[in-house]
Length: 413
Picture (cartoon, rainbow, N blue to C red):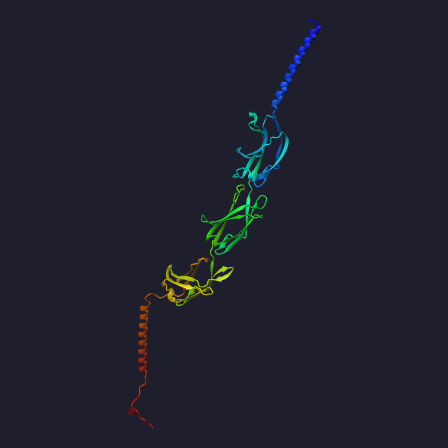
């Protein structure tokens, strides 16, 4: 073989080697390009803070990069999950290639979140999907961030409130609702106001908080309440996002108290002495108001046994006058004490009133056979009187001087 042929043969082998190497390099490049068909990266995922309250909004900022082949169908999305891995919020899908930045303002109370717990943990995930490749049907999580959401404590503050109310009076009050954490007033919230007594609803009405978080109430003790204990209940409707939304206040509705002042009364009396008593019955209605022309029941007791019952009325000044003779309080001579029970049975607006007066008789009564003894004493006195009269006459006659006859008289000169 000539030298020229030898060189030519060597060049052919060299070209084949170059072609083989080129083919291998192109194959590797193609394979590399195929393996890098979907490229994604999270640049940052951040929120304005990590602890939120349910009436706030989440400020979310995200930057990402996405690249894929034309035949691929990839997308980028932000998703929120609760602790049970339930999807509670998601952004739109972003399919554009390149590097992007996006901001979201997400109002917490609109999240599909269970607010029955006081605190909730939320997981924010940056996800990539590729619907054109079965390998990427399961989302790729590029980054995860968690935040905490707490319920706020709501306070209810009442002004001009009283827990005791006289029957017939009205109660005018203001109720203010605000956040304990910020002292900011709630506004525009619906409030259900009810009054409950003995498990029955007596009053129910809907109100809306004004810009100061206030509602004004005017309640009647006659129409909106009953005698006894009433519970005034405020329920902030649809406030499942707050830690406490029901407030209850107790109101006691009672009749007006009746008072008695004793004007004339003596506890110790003589046996034959009549009772003279005066009492002033009244109630307070901003001023002293006499109990006019009201019936008072009077019971007289001797050793827990009722002997007499009478009814008397107060006069136009609220004065009750009692004048009783000794026959109204005759008692056993062995017991020289008795008491009088004066009872006012109340009215629609006035409470019952009872006054007890005790008496002590200074002289005990004679025995029950007093008439027979009196007769004996009288007869004895009459007999003694007759004997005394006879004795006097006898002595008078015995001492009387005697006169001589005129014939027996001699005169001496």
